[in-house]
Length: 371
Image (cartoon, rainbow, N blue to C red; front, side, top):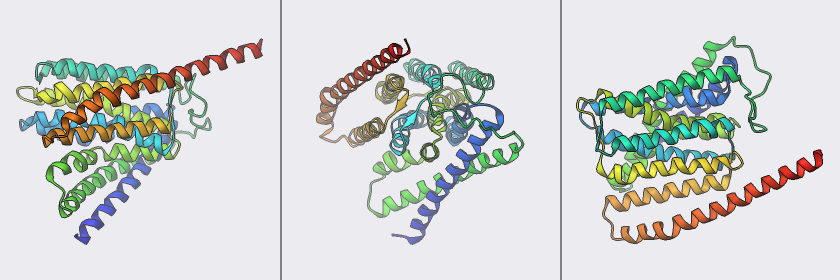
């Protein structure tokens, strides 16, 4: 194994950590200085910044006639963002969720996923469909910023412990905060590139196949900025930034990245048949799963984060078995369809029913005490 490659991997990982720390620190202070909640910054500045590399790749792929690759990467990145990034963040620290996020931003994410699925049914994302999606991200961004300015850094009905400290510092250091954000994005981009390249070389040295590398190392590498940012934000207690980064990234990937790629592609963006039949429906499914999970208790517990990560491992395993046409694919699919998914659904339904009942009982008890 090449020592220089291993050193590059370590340095790239350190750059990711340093970049995430700089981005989270700068973004959280920028939110306070701007008079908005960290959630607003997470949904816009952080999410769009960490999604900028995907946008550049999407434009280049669309112009060179590789639109199918763009669609696959974006859909895969969205699934990874929700299951892996959110799951890892919740494992690092249980995430407290803003009611505004659950009631407004998550439904927007679900609607964007459904709209993409509808547009992709004919196997192509046309220019007018791209324009419609792009109009959606512009409208959404303007609404988020306007509402953030109106509600201030501590909107009403935030769960206890979520609102940032009221001792807001005056907005005198805008350039410093913007510089921290810019430095963080730069380090994240460089670190992700170095880590992916080094990981591919290390995997080849260990005899791992090109297919396995592309399904694991490269796929994870494209979302390393989101992973590093959300996990560091969660560890620092900036749960708004952690969750807002993921939800905003999914929205931006669909309404921004794919929209622009569809607009600039000469004949529209080709959508693979497998993506229409399997991967996009999976993406829609995991976005839908967020709503009831987030709605009950307005938090993502550590065990739910573990569940998310396990399901991403299952999804990746399925992709690998399908790619190599493994004999175990049929058995794996049947076990997943007839056992794992129903058992998970029943378990979650019972858990959330009990949680809702406990909340109602506690509310009635508080009412009797107040009376």
